[in-house]
Amino acid sequence: MNQDRRSKKVILVSHCLLNQNSIVQGLARRPSMVKELIDILHELDLGIIQLPCPETLYLGLRRFWQVREQYDTQGFRELCREVLKYIITYVREYLVNGYEVVGVIGIAGSPSCGIHHTSSGNWRGNPLSATEPKRVRGMGVFMEELLSSLRESGLVSKLSRFKLLEFDYDKPQESLKRIREELRGS
Image 1 (cartoon, one colour):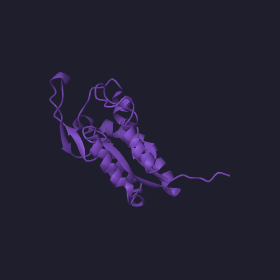
Image 2 (cartoon, one colour):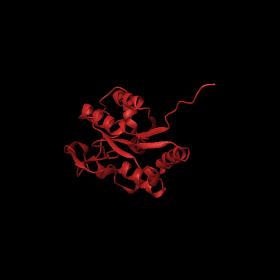
Image 3 (tube, rainbow, N blue to C red):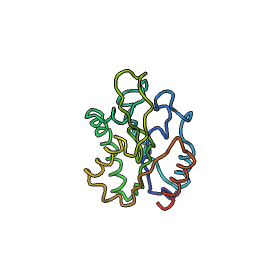
Image 4 (tube, helix red, strand yellow):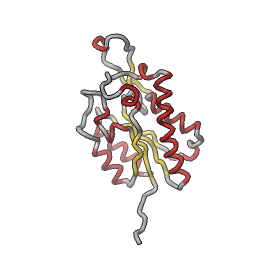
């Protein structure tokens, strides 16, 4: 009989890190995924829970890029909470069965999946008149709702070593190094 070799460790990962096809047209940096990140997670024996892309669910693939202020609406937050119900169910199921959920990897500068950095701008009206968005310290709307849902479900106390990590498409090698170092002790 084969011996079960699972690590019993999983990590939540923003959708586009595994599927670049969900990113706004013109902004995808890779043809399919950030393979180097997946290689690191594999090397560290971490299973992956792929988070849904709330922007694609909300506005589809033919959307314009937006800033945090545009997604910071009651309707978008309600959508985030609805899709996060399934993620919370996954997390709870893993935890009650002795697994460790080691953290989440978001996207630096994302209006929805930023962990430490999001985008900001006073955008409205004609998209052609929009100025370049600013990258600011702060969390994206979807990640705020994820952490809020984890707290409200009573799971935070079971996530004692839960790490909040961020991949930066502008600094991929630096991000990969930091993520590997942070997760190595998990």
